[in-house]
Image (cartoon, rainbow, N blue to C red; front, side, top):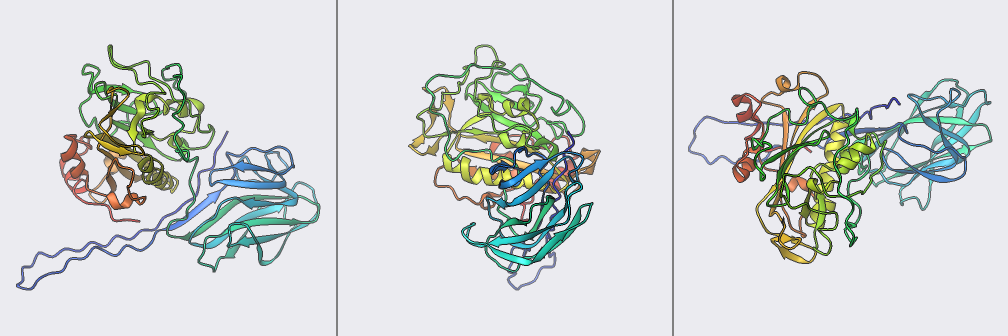
Length: 469
């Protein structure tokens, strides 16, 4: 199947100021003013399926949509940019989610097959779908190819849209594009966390290993999971710095702590195509060092901590093999629920959005220290002392435009994001609050995070704190 890439473009300006002249006056240094990012998110329905016309919901890349007397069309008669589009007969297509900061909406549309001309209306709601008002005039489809129409959004509140059909002849809808300023509120791909962790099964799932498919990352070179270096010089000798190549990611595992030291992976739009749903098939991993305690799917039950993914489930939806690999307990840490489900989930979604902008992102996540605060209070360990509860959870990300020769393309101005959060339950939801420099994380962990880069480049990108929106 051929998947369209989401077309999301971002514009961010960063202002840098410096002064070398000494004066007797006090100089007041203020943070640079960063304008809100501009977003453009296109829904092409390429990961959606619905055959009957009967009313029902579909889950697409942008969220949930209600299709009433409509289906996902994939025949030669369907007008589409790619392999799928919406075919609407007499009902409506309605968003089940709101979008914030919108300024424009774009829709591609045309008549289906040999049907006669047909009419539809664009409806907008500012009250979460309770009521709708028409935007613009009626649209008449008499075109045999997809036509693009645009609609200005003047309200400042979150909005959702409904495409309402008039008449019985059919139309196709595709590439619905949301443009706006700031945070859209759209979650790209399937969210990685449920409202609560479901670690309540008393019986442990059967441990398993990794099954790698053709969608796994290459072992070396561009798009490989360890391209920027092995942060702790992990090998298959030390049980507490044990190198695991899990095909879809690489990690250093700590057998004494029962958690990863760090996990490293590559992310681009091909990795979260939605082919696989979130599988939730937590299980112990069979490939640990000899004698290591095998953390089970039920080892966190009753602890007050979530089974917090290092590489998130939603970063690997290109196949069931890919998604399943993220649910091994060797990829988990005891993470405070609010940290996992709010702060961390928000950052994960942000990085997927960045990766949908025509970028690729190299990510390393890890944890350190002992002692966190979950929903049942503080703890140093869980699972009868077999699993360490970290005090801090961190992540770094290098952002590059999609291309080749990735190592050589990193410069002193390449965007690098570094975040270090306390593993507590009263954490702030905005992950940007916890931005630090890469060097700050290296000092806390003793790791060399980008060792494959020249020293002068490391010195430039590791000493700055990201300020972009």
